[in-house]
Length: 113
Length: 115
Image (tube, one colour):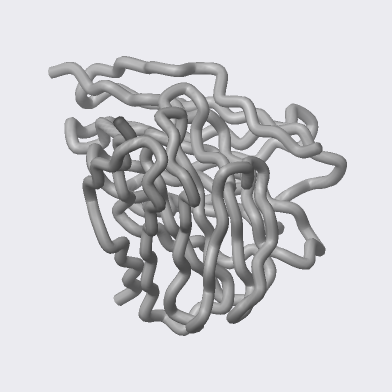
């Protein structure tokens, strides 16, 4: 069965902290994605990766960075967390074939105080 | 740039009644089209997708969607709603012949089911 896991369901951090959100998939997928989800705004793509050590900016990369050292793991990094980064963060993955279904993790709800 | 519009933020339907959720897209050509559902506290699950061929697509949980090129629409339907269908529904589009399989999502429609 397809599985995407995220390291935390809920996270509370303080302004200025460095925050790591981890995502792991067990399907040997080439592509991985990070989205943030906010009420009334839907899902917005932050970054994605199509291979180990490769990354591409999405629609809203400002204030974020990513790391993909292993194929199964894709990390989202908030270098200095701010209150406007309070949000739900969703990770997804899919195989490297055109428009294959994206499989989503359960999400991490981040609160920055 | 491609965009997706879901004109209804909330919809309330009585249990057993039929459902139609609207989705319109803006794109230069026919894109790939998806509907996802998100139950409370969960990630997104694919309901159905359209790539080509028959414009009426069947999905899981009794959902179907119809692609209408002339209207740039991909509306989701279900003939009889169950209380467990209460969730948020997202329409998404993806470009054909793109190097990467990124998606653009609509802002979602929250479905409430009344007894």
